[in-house]
Image (cartoon, rainbow, N blue to C red; front, side, top):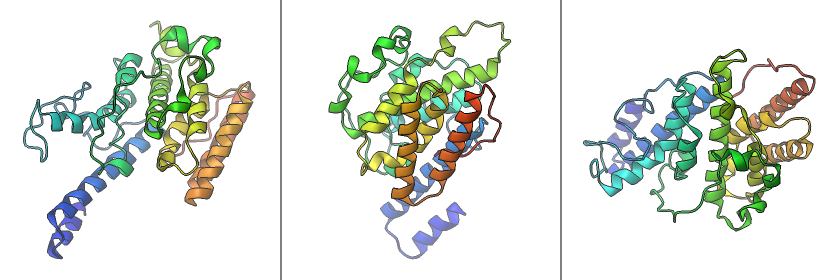
Length: 288
């Protein structure tokens, strides 16, 4: 079907660049939806794009000879383009049960968001290096002294892209811990204490969500991280839960999509069951 659509573009005389952009957008949309389904249902992706050997290196460099628009294995253009996919590759490996992925790998991700459909056609941005939230530092993550981001950094000065990238970094770290706990189970003989602690991570995520302006172009990226981090908010996090509820209500109003309502209802049911000491078995929804 996709190839037929591309052929249709060519048959009506569409410019080659338009065909290329359309194909790139649709491809990124498919890969993103596949990733959302995979992480929401905790199952492997349909596509092997992120898992195939040689496509993407975690450092952002790989042999990509033959791919249009990429200079080569060491070309700067290719390296920048490949960095788009570092984060979803890590997440896909985690979902597939790869326990070798570490918090440090996620912490070292450069924050590139070009893998999201909304930004797939934008040229890779050369962001100035900045200090990431120390999501892999147990001493900071678990210390109540650092519950507020303002206690060790200045998030109010960040641009919207940086806010979003750091939110995804936190969500990815939480997701890894959730998956490790799920794979290992409560009776595992392998010590995984470093994977068990969430600490300040969910609180930092909510603070970042609150920082994004209501008219931000990055608002449409929030559902996936919300679906990951909000499940870690316990009964003592009533302020944060209320903030997540307001965010989902605002997203539903802005984008006129009932999916945000279903996500809100799902989270409220999850919170209610967890507060009573029960595991929530109400099924999963697609958060993304």
